Length: 153
Image 1 (spheres, rainbow, N blue to C red):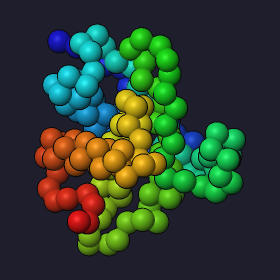
Image 2: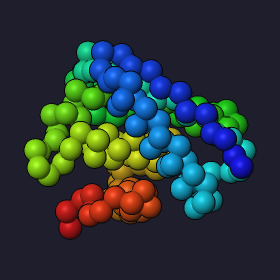
Image 3: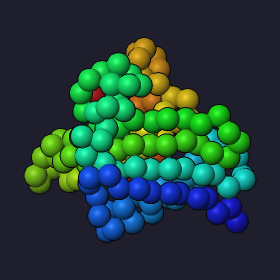
């Protein structure tokens, strides 16, 4: 059995309960990806940062040239077995939640899926890339037992 390593850090956002849930999701996602043969059998290492907008904004500015907070950033590593880092702004995610429709854990799981797919080489700049990435997001969402569609038709 493959034992993946998922590290998590909190900078200005998140707590032990939330970070524990995100780590459990990450392990499940890596297992699903391995089952889909998107990951090799050796253990995979993934780092996740739960942060606030003050933490993610300078990263977005310095790496993407956009001086604003964002929801998720992915930093792939070119090392065997190490996928890279996914940085999630809990603050931005919280603003996107609509009471009774979309909870914070839904948004964070979606962002984790999105960020992880970026680490695996997916992109959404071009319409054909976007379609492939959105299908992969939906497949992972469903594989985790979540109900409903992520994107409107």
